[in-house]
Length: 456
Ligand code: NAD
Image: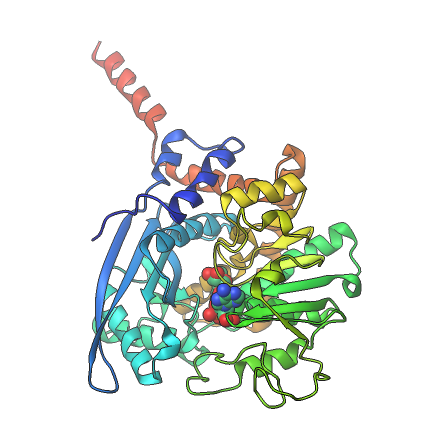
């Protein structure tokens, strides 16, 4: 076990509780409980590398709150993983599960590693080694991991297999986002992007948007970013800019999204596990700075990631990492609508700047909740041993996303508050109800009075 991190991103994340609590039915004690993660596990993972050396990686698993059900949340492999980040991500998961009403609390995990530097076999050993270290902390009824940044279905399959070996029992419900033949759910791979897409479709209906007139910029072109871009592109939205860790591309009349996805995911060394190529590369020859003519529809002007956030577009979709819109650049964000597919892309100070400008922000705990919602479907299917069709999954997800989006949108309009505050208030209502149903000081203090009355 390790110490709760005293400051940083987690403290920034929980700042949003106080403002939202003004509009929620939540007892002060329940709110206090949410300020602390329930449990933190820090582990060291020794991995034998291909050249015979031993490397020891650091990893974390945090369970934030399990009042509404087992904790649920992804595992991230990234060089910048740190405890405060994992705590914040676990806190957001608690809120996110409450937003969509699924019976889970929030958890998260992370390993400090640049997985692109590992071979496939090293990656498998690391994935299995992490599970070996956290096996007593997770389980279908306690804490259920899933993919996050730089982890994917194949890694989830390795992890489920390792856990099953340790327990000597096939346990598919311990982890979600698995490959379909290993108990994954149809519709899980694009669920995060699809959930955000359903939110945008509700906005389209409410604001009477003409898709072909809508210019969209997507920061981060991984699992989440690719799918929301693909679905919007298929409906006629113009995806004018996209970026990944190596930079971005822009084309005023719209980029060829299916082509860009194909390019990004074409295999190189670990291509079966990661999209190791970049949206900035030329699809003809694969070179970043080639001299091929730039007439291919997938390519455009190459520019920086930072510039993408400040483009004159109608919808900005941050779908990479946290802390992208900050006090430094929030004033320069020109998009009137921001749909947060990444977790925590906007800091709390930047939030106020955006709110002050009237930017409509569909917050992460709503916009990217499609992923955990279909993870819940996967867990339910694993436990029932009965599998749904892709149509079933899409319809159920669409129903939940549209319903929760509209409830929150109307609440925000009624109370004249921003969508983020309204979304947190909506989550706090559900979490508060669960915590309070176990009793608060109001209940217990009354019971003392009652027992005194009885004794008298
Ligand atoms: P991923 O690993 O599939 O993709 C991450 C993408 O971000 C890659 O294209 C990478 O090149 C890009 N990237 C990394 N650093 C960047 C930078 N500085 N600027 C621009 N791009 C950068 O990860 P993912 O699963 O798509 O997750 C992306 C975000 O969505 C994360 O914040 C994650 O927590 C969130 N999210 C993911 C899921 C899910 O189901 N995958 C669910 C909910 C939330």
